[in-house]
Image 1 (cartoon, rainbow, N blue to C red):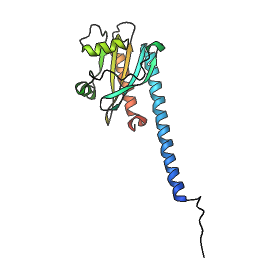
Image 2 (image 1 turned 90 degrees about the vertical axis):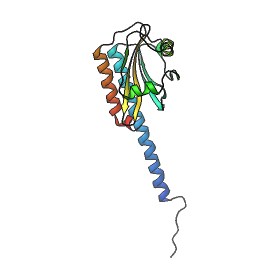
Image 3 (image 1 turned 60 degrees about the vertical axis):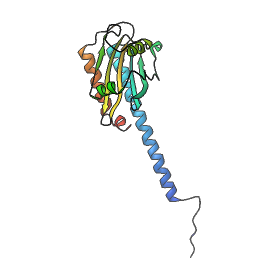
Image 4 (image 1 turned 180 degrees about the vertical axis):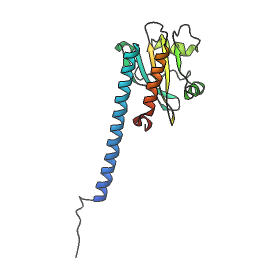
Length: 179
């Protein structure tokens, strides 16, 4: 008795293809969930804090990253894709944020900061700056940053706590822990 198989139907290849498609679909869903969470978070923070810009600075490689999301009061404040000054953000600053540093600068013009940092913030039209780390089990995933561009701003403890809470929520989200 001879058995013949249809060369167009290979069950093993079909199962492998389906597994591959399932993995792609799961990754796509996780990415969409992550993006929706970040967009919702940055928009809510910008509205609640009444600032010109809230951004997510994502680290894609050891201390190299870029602004991947932003919520704006006006399109003129867009810095999407900005990578930051390479010479300013070094291992020393990274270690501070890894340790949970929160940096609230009410006025970049009167704050004791590095010249390259002040120049960079001026270039981005920043006048007041609030930076909170997003820390996952893998380390420093990103920075959640609020910018007030039009005038100095005295950051309230409630502003800082809100940013920290939102950063912790982001860090705990499965869609971010897996990325």
